[in-house]
Length: 196
Image (cartoon, rainbow, N blue to C red; front, side, top):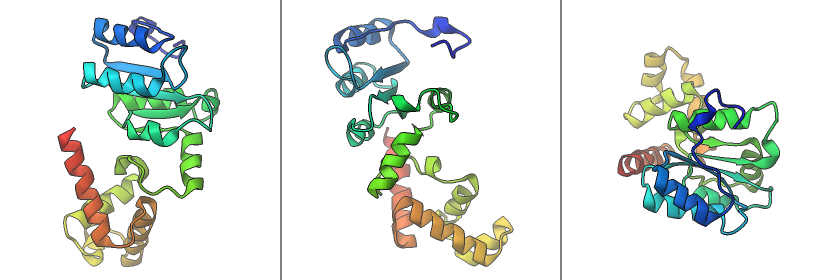
């Protein structure tokens, strides 16, 4: 918490799931930061139960080791996931993670990214904009609106081949083979975001 300029924002610190749940309710917390390892209970259950009590609660989970259940953490749809071994690295994961929480974006720490990439996982419940560069996102927006590669190249001032390369890279990053699958995935994420 020493990273924060206003440490008084911290209203409670707990070591057990029961204590943390009590604090979430008592303070009507806006953000919950926890570890998957607690003295009693666990962070996964804590996030799930806290959200039942405070539905718009933003959450961030630290995983104790690379062997921690990353898929279980992802399934909770937290605002961020970071492994404890990333703390203190040049990537500044704590700062970046909290900035992501504040701007309602998802943060995935370096170790978690590496684990997912090495496992070949393609169905990662991340928001697309967190995986794509700004330019790739703008190309994807054009694809979603039904424009062809030539139209996109004219609208964005890019060469036709550059647009084709962007579309190919976007499909690779998102684990889809065709533009149809790409549009379907984008629409599914858009609908899911409106429902949440």
